[in-house]
Image (cartoon, rainbow, N blue to C red; front, side, top):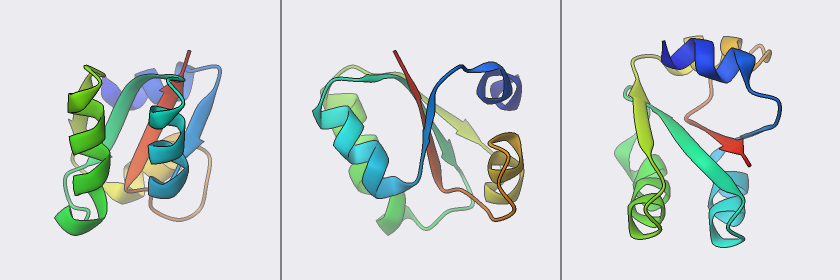
Length: 82
């Protein structure tokens, strides 16, 4: 289901740095984090999202998350924008 949400989203941001920036700007509706990504990479995103009461969903694979975003490489985090 989570991959479906990413596929159907109108606006997304891919990547950790861009996601943290969008969170700080208050633009994020929901975050998707790959469970197989390094915790030191995704930790800041999860921490920021929880502090702002933004829902965080975990998916099992960076590769599948990247594919759902339409990119050829894995994605550690994706944000759905309001």
